[in-house]
Length: 173
Image 1 (cartoon, rainbow, N blue to C red):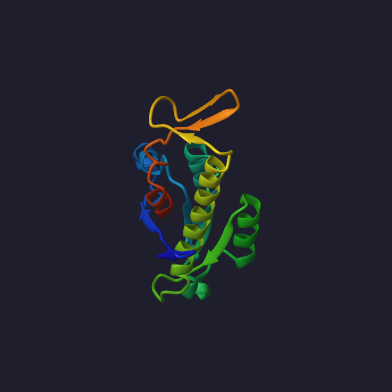
Image 2: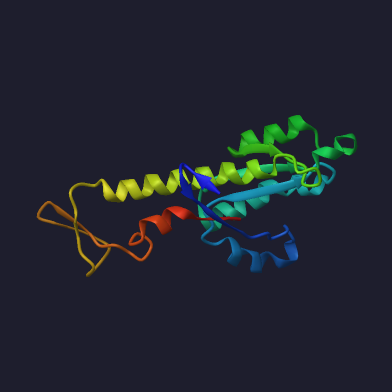
């Protein structure tokens, strides 16, 4: 997808929220830069698990852009989670709430567009913070950052050596 005129690629890992694979799923979301926490409108247990999943993700990844998705809004007549509950949970966890219906293709794209935009903004900000420290001398040797006699020497790490690549990749859990 294109964000601010740049191609952004999303790698999506679906861990399915299955507790029996908890040890394995941690390896998937380690290093993630954004997260989608999804519950079903018709499944109370999936809603109640959101807090725990948010905590697990934060323990592995720190605070990353996260969206809570209420899926199956096409089945609101069978809802066991009321809209107000979902809104309160999202506010409490500091996340955006997006209601979707995968079956009807309602708001699915907006979930990924929102997170891709957030990731892109954060990456640009982080890159800008590294680049705008001053008038750096760039050297390929030694540690990635050094300060000598008031001169800041930035040495590109593998990620920062290719600006366009860094800004284009975003892993969403």
